[in-house]
Length: 187
Image (cartoon, rainbow, N blue to C red):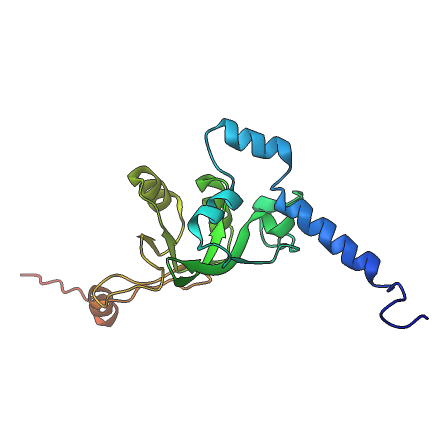
């Protein structure tokens, strides 16, 4: 007896293809790239996420995505999941969103490739990485071990590129509301 549950689905090849592409993306560039990362004494981005996230809570997003046309740094590269592992889950019971890269240089290059530039953040216990991020990220503000939505009214706050070209804060407000004038007195 044939029916909808026993007849092979015409969608089966598509589902199988999605599973194969997902498996390829999870290999992180293949065995050779993983071995190279391990030879350098580093874990892969997926391995780092496995250590960071509470077990069984990570949900990956965009695994089938491809680089956006606006990311010139990714032009011509085959990059399942856009070359970045993104998702959400829990860390020590707290809900978080994460994006994992294989190198700080790659993360900075892709961040700077954005048309926006209000604030960026880096979470690290290495002062050298924090200083590299501060010197290299082209954003109005770079925060270390703090979320990029943090601000205080007295800090200069503003962005670059499509995030604006001005600053907020008391000193900037006074400057903006002050009209500079000159007077010349002759005897």
